[in-house]
Structure formats: C-alpha cells, structure tokens
Length: 372
Image 1 (cartoon, rainbow, N blue to C red):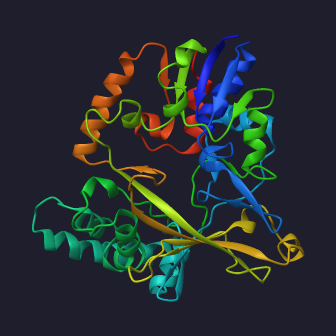
Image 2: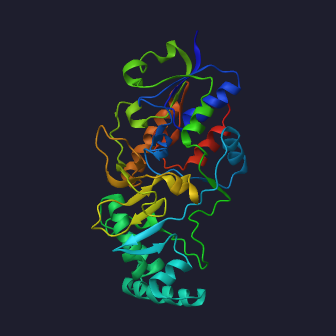
Image 3: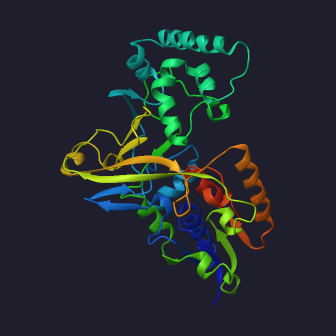
C-alpha cells in the first residue's frame, strides 16, 4: 500500500505536517536519520530532568491559533525566559532594561538611563564623522554606546559567529531593544512556555498513530526510489544536500554541548546564563530543570543537569543549526530555492529545507496555513 506522503525529518515541521495530513485522511511515513524522533526539540531524561539535548528551546508566539494548537496536544507551563549575562563575574539582566542600566551605571530612573545611553551614543556617532556604520561594532556603538557593547554584546557575538565584530555586517544588529522599564521577560510575545513533561510529549502527540522509522538515512534508502512508495515527499533536511551540492555548499553555524550532572539541587538559579566575555569559551550555560521546575520542586529533585554551549563553524558530519546570512550564502540559497520550486511533488520545509532561521512557532504556523 502506497503512502500519500513520505516525510523526511521528525522535527516540528515534519511532525506537524504529518499530524495535519493524518487529520485529512492521508497516510504518512515519517523517517529520521537520528535514533529518536523530534529533531532539535528532543529531550533526554537525566536524573528526572528533561534535558534539551540540542539546545534551549522556549516556545513563544503572539499567534493565538498556534498557541491553542500546541496546547491541544500538550498543556504548556508558565515558563518565562529571563536570561542573565555574566561578564567577568558581574551579573546583568537581559534584555537591556532598567535593571541592566542600574547594574551598569547605578541609574534609577528612565530619564537617567536615557541620558547615559545618549551620552555614549553621541561619542560613537561623532567618531563616525558623518559616515554610515560599516560593520556590527560601529552599528552597535551608535545604538547603545560603549559600556553595553563591550560588556554585553561584543564577546558573545564574536563567539557566536566566530569572527570579530568589525568583520560582521552592520545589518545583523540594525536595532537593539532597549526597555525603560524593570522587566526581564526576554520576549514580547503574549504566549510563552514549555510543554509540561518536555517537548517529547508534543512530538509524541503530533505523531500519534502515524508510522515512523528512526535511524534511517533518506539518501541511502529512499532518495532514488521514494516515488515507488509515496505520492509526495516532504523534505526537511538541508536543501543543498538534496541537490547533491551541485551549486556549491551552503555555510552553517553549529553548536555543541558539554553536559554534566551537578550534585546540587540548584546550580545557577536560572535556566540560561550568557557568558559575554570573549575569554570564556562557551556562550552560555543552561540549567535544564528551571524550564519545568519551580519553587520547592527545584529542591525536591536533589541533582541538576547543566550544559555549556559552544558555537562553532560547521564541518561535515556536524549538525547544521544556523544559516549564515551573508551575500554569498543568500544568493546560493535563493538559487537552491528556485531549483526546489521546480521539483515535482516535493515540499521543502523547516530551517534546513529553506535555509532560513525560524523560531518554533512560525514553523508550526506555516504548516497550519498549508493546504494538505
């Protein structure tokens, strides 16, 4: 019996597509090259804690339709993302808000904060002598000034992209959110949270009743003959790999993690702490229990799991994470997208399949708006 869809990849795009197709009475086979389902949102249970194996994932959206949809699969908790920055042992709240400005300069009112920022911006604008910012460093200095740039942006950004801020394009940081209120909530979205019981509950709910196979390499087992078993293909792998890199290879940034168990119930008091100085090799430390455990529950679980996150240049065999949005890659990606449009009965989706950076909610929104 033939499938209506062969779906390559069981991340949020593939799993949501399969769910919607099943609702429409279609028969799907979902395959994944990893030994588990869920793509990058997969969680591994260690010491009773749901560990975000492929990095911190915090669901946030303003779209009520998307929020209601994911909550119809699994209820989401009330987690609010309030990261902290550690610069040379001193802590600052993120995003930049009145708490940050008080920690940075001792200012207590919005007027004092604005005056300090404007004073520092004026120095940067004067140094440009009338010309436009040519790189990320010049752009950031004209937006928030020297203190915030040097302590909270420069080192973190250089670690993230593997190059100096003077070598990065200005457009990456065209605007920096500055809040003149005491609010540490990183996102402005109305809805925010983590699935109760972890993201595996969401994926399992989406894929319930759907045939799945793990540890399957599409290119070895199905690339040449998929039309014999399915009417259509949904492909969420890397778009350049699908076309055998015939136009050239796209660049990616990737991240790796060093995860360990700490023999304490509370290691850093927050889910995410960014390390913003260049000399600390990792970009941030994630303490996973704080995504789902609050109050006494933190101490009822006697151990904790932390992950150091390292940003690095992608090499073959690694997991690609972030598109590198420079002129060369944007042009190459567009050429691949044009090839993809001509592929008969093939749908390209997700971050890798479109070479576009997406948060989780927009991926689901795209699928919910598709005709299947």
